[in-house]
Length: 266
Image 1 (tube, rainbow, N blue to C red):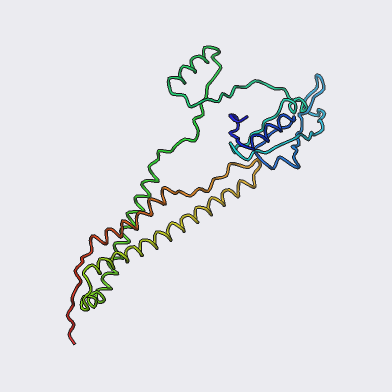
Image 2: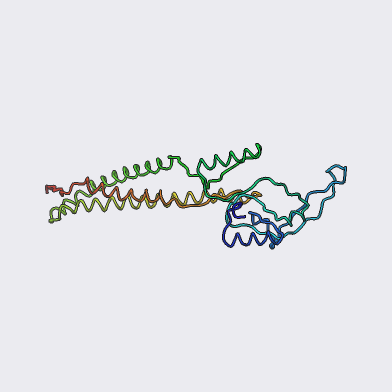
């Protein structure tokens, strides 16, 4: 049961108990009503007669349970007792073997042994969720970081130009040369921090809204499709969170610490 569905914990225990009670296990909770699943056995034709017009057996109500863990695909597991009551015949289709992930040599040797038993036998190894090597996300993250740094640099430069008279006043009253560097550091940090926070918040909200709208379309279908999970991309957010720190560091290193002194003519 566990290798076939991926269910675990209390969910797996309840599914096994349902099968032992002569019921069936489904992956869509809408099939289960008051702990039972309605099964309509196939029509039984008369001996030598056509299938059309055959007598339709009465529907059966069997104990049912809907899995909440494991694979979300539409699949039904019927116990032997429920199979017999439904008038269905079991047919051996294959085997499910739970093992650790084999290496290439072990898998090739196993395939050769199975093929030697019968040419019609095939082996399929499930290695779990596939990891994507697509560099598009990394490229987009780097591009977003560079654009943010450029915007921070421009905004910080404009702010420094506007605050030049204020810096002159600070120099006149005896402020330390490090004041300008600290002021530029705080300005770039505020601009980059607020901009990055707003950008990430809007992006996450937009992604959640789009995925929720797509998942709503699956709820109207029968059987329902696999919904898209809403997952926060923490590695990407962590990489983007470094951008304000890089902007502050660049502003602090590239800003002249000497305060300007301007002569005013009255």
